Length: 609
Image (cartoon, rainbow, N blue to C red; front, top):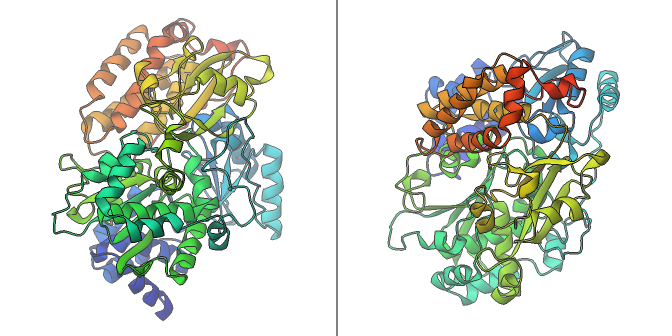
């Protein structure tokens, strides 16, 4: 097994974009996968030799991630999402239907070598659940009959991927980041330049100094849109200007939080806006190299973003001489391989350096010692996309939306049991009730609201009586939950909260990187206890044990994945305690016994990295 001369040349070109050769390990594995159709032990040994690392290192990296195609897997990878938003919309029914019709279970391949069936984690398509990914193509709201027709065409050799159209619901609120995403060609450089694209970056680089840019963003009040909500300008200001080491800007496009699907559309439909934000942020911190870390599942997004990068380079918008200033800035797209933990900024940096996505101990924080042990800023896609907009329209305009401490608009992701799930760009601070009932159209089928998770699956739950809260960082924090990534998951009164929590905890058990004992063991214990409770084998004492485990997890690990599991667990057990007690008393789910809940479990078997 050997690479062709063309593939070797491509590999060397990729390696040249990193200061350390081993950082090109994940791209090299993608190249191996493309050239030979899958990743085998022989292929891993080849990559180890070419990159200059041990075969054990390569094996350790490959086995950490879930998205690489292994030797022996089928021509068509049928990947069914099973996390909570898809499960609420019959995602597990879709998996079970495919399992029966193909005669295989998760991880197995049909005897003819055509199909491999996989249960996968959130695909960031929550508003169009249940989602089926075929190889790298997404398909929306797939029923069993839809899946049968697709499989029939694949067997007949007539399969072509007919991708569904993009949609953004209309509301009374003006669109900012989503204004152009439905227009034909919005992903192209010509379209972006026609609407004034790259003019703000040009103005900044030719008329402003880095400290002025940082101060401008500070005054705007822009807060990170990736989850933490940290002030963006303040974060940029943490980079020590006198540090002689190279400085790096990293765009976090590893959108993996169940309930969140905003960055996917910005990547696929407006990539040049993100690239312009990268230019401004890089210049502000004096970074000459920027990296976009995109999650492995976003195959289409990676293709679109790479085309946009190529267009920008061809026009001289990246490279040695930006806008005639002599400032060099290079940008590299780095594709992950399926690991939620890489959404955590230091886990992302570990992966970007060519390793497993293990989070790093802080301090030192990335702004002081991050990528390749150099000062690094990691910003979310939506955050960077907003920067050129604020520069164009001004601070006063931006602060005209939202609240004093949470200014601007935010792209919210509404999914679950609502009539009109989708992306809603609205001013920060609108009431959650308005989002569910006015924008989302309320609960389908005449059912009543039972619970809402307002900020992605890691946020504490709110009951139906708690939705008169404003959707901004501080109001939700005061309600003892969080805005997070803006993933709003709605559950109606037929939802079994025990089963919903089991689904959430199974996800975090699977996605724990295993570094820290409280997280590795705690998520596993919680998963097992919830399985017992839901299947009629639980005890009243289990409820207290769940809360004790959560207390031992929060704040005791390198990153906050343990906290992300504990927060929804504590809140759901505490707020729906009677439902848990009823499961114990009746030795199973009373909702299923009454025909009010799905007849199959939403949770799937767990397995960590």
